[in-house]
Image 1: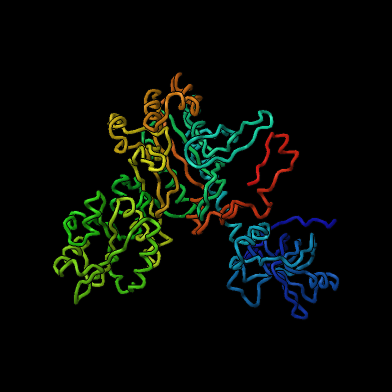
Image 2: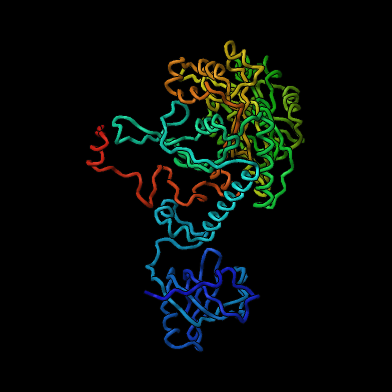
Length: 589
């Protein structure tokens, strides 16, 4: 067993202030170069890299052992810091080096299957299979350290605001709403199953009924849903709940938290109060309930102008109860050919759009993809809605409201990205408020909760639950950063009779509601305070603040897009003995 060198400095800490001093470091060999009478090794730890030198002044035995060092050997080094003759501008301490005096090799390494460097263009699946190598990269260590700092600041802030961190159960009753649950079979109660929590929603409400007053938790949650860049089967929430509050109280605390987070972590000043945009306005202006306000291209309605149009696709859309809207790519017409627009038309077919129509404005003329239905004066009237000037391109979609909003919302942000208008150094935070309480599910043939069935309606809208449920506004709010929802919450229903009314609006009988949510309704019989809260998606928040494109870059051991951990090879089949003990028999199809 090799002797352990007691570290005095991290590699990245060795700088000019230590010239002439003796330092002791531990780490991995990044690379080694033998130039005859000199051996240069780059020693790496999570803080950075420092150059180690073995020269002819050291004992021959030490020189030979230095020459044997290879990439990813784990070593300890003691040496004297001196100024480098040839400065390396790529290293923050590239103006110093360490002349080796002692060397301990803790372990040797085979040639790794991936390079340990940030710009290594290796497949993501290979990175995840060899995650212990991937994690050695400076970027990955920086991401994990950043995440730690955010979590620590979060706990410190909410502790100072009187919140108590409480752990809630991981094995709970399966829930009927939302995404699919991950089920866990019970050995003791064969035939019954626990679920892994999609969120601690009901338990944090129970904590309010239990007098906790202000609760927080950084908690794992689980959803069995299709994956994408910002989704994982297991993810982390900053979960919060407060008693005796209304919307303004919750948002005020969260704004101060976000202001402190950006100031201390990002060195960015956030001005308060944050903008609040009602859901309906967000959809009308941006085609999205998570609008990106770093650029323009706002939606404009043409419905009134085209209701009696000779162009049947416009007129029919309006007469069928739909809408005709567009966005103006101000000053960018020359960046898009007919072929480009045709490709965009294909892109929005996934949202149900039947076509993408356009108007081009130049100094010489105004043209469109529907010229035969409009004379120049008619096109000029349409273009005036967008205050169009030379070199503007107006893109128009007609159809049902959801199709139009989804299509233009997508085009607006997609084209801003292509045009380089998404400033990654700018952080636009805003609240979207007053969501619809319910949305009609055509497949299920009934209304479902837009957020969850415990969300409080606006008190003025309660009578509409019985007559026009689709028009009821929720006391719900989402926090949006640069077009991405990073958190959301609501004021909860605390009145037992109103909660029953909500369940009936969702098509649940009293018996069904009692079966699915009985323990919460039972708690409401014994007095529960007005309460509300919010949950942030921690992984998504860290991804955005670090400028990453996938939350897998900010999670130590993520799953891939097939929900598999390539490192540990989970999920994997269970043994026959385990299945028998659980009373489970697999049926092969």
